[in-house]
Length: 300
Ligand SMILES: [Zn+2]
Image (tube, rainbow, N blue to C red):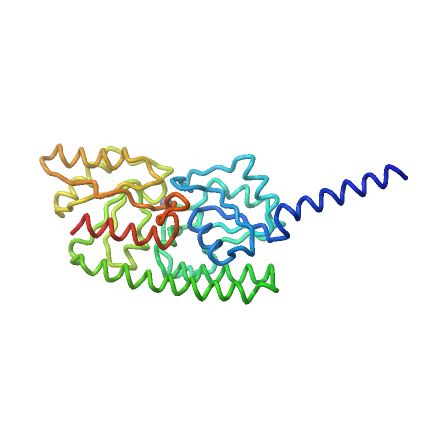
């Protein structure tokens, strides 16, 4: 009898510890910093959001740590990008089939996506660089959270309204900044092909040294070809990315120089991860504006 009472007490203690830790909130785990930022904007104080990847982290190469597996196991909802962006997490997600595991890219019409042979999904996964896509993803996050906590639906919807307004303001701001740059100067050279949706949305030609995924490194031939391209098109600046080692872009700059020309490194762009949390670039809106200002100012 004593033993039964003890066991019951232990179970009660464990249960109360868990709910105390989360304050009875929904436990949400997210992968990239872009998704973490979005879910925090919608969930606000109503959900407990834990992002797996930090700033400067490359999602193509990211592997789950033991701590991540624990977070995923304890999650009520998991939001990830999908389209094989988190290539090394796919197996982990497959084991979480009993969980509410949401690939945010599922909400997008596949016929409108940019195709790619580099990914098992056959699509370019860098969808956050199209603000209109990110608005659709916002709606999807709101729907999912509202289904999980129906009593908070109106709060999530109010947060959505505020956030969509921010995204609209962002779009018109970057559009007017990009308008400063003549169309023939809109050529964006970066370390890997993260900016194809950006290019499509804002009429840039985008050339990545490394292909779509950072899992394959650029070869000497790629560097030679691209340096010739830079010289032919008289491109003023090329860009480093915060989540990709800068040596590839430096090699490209050196190659241009060896041919008797100059190209500057126009700055570091945030491609597959936001800046440090607590900074302006640590938010999706701040990152986007920073990137556009950096690109336009360097290419002008
Ligand atoms: Zn990428």
